[in-house]
Image 1 (tube, rainbow, N blue to C red):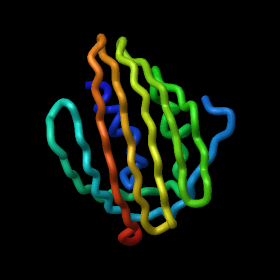
Image 2: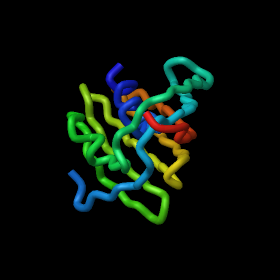
Image 3: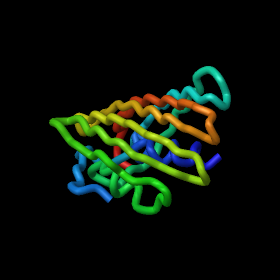
Image 4: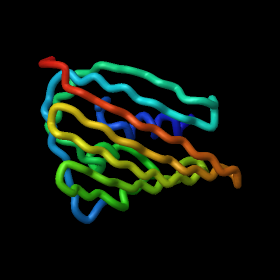
Length: 138
């Protein structure tokens, strides 16, 4: 499903058209991320842990969405070490409102995201939360 791809896109780089882009800094390197996802498609909580080399030194939802058709970033704000964003998407007749929060101290981070979808009158919700830590150099 296209929205599962969108959900994967929204998790900040495996940790990880807005008026003012805000970025949340963190340290590049090898990051370990544990993500919990509750989906209307599978029931229950699906937990996945990944390790990925992250070369970026900040997270910017606007940059993440550059290649995503059908989505518009409507909020992108940094307050201290926390970034909050909202995206509105329409893909193949399915509307989605994505709300996310990411917090980082540079060497670790956590966040959460909720995706409310309307597909042909059927309401669905997907929730994700994650914790990340930098475990070394790439």
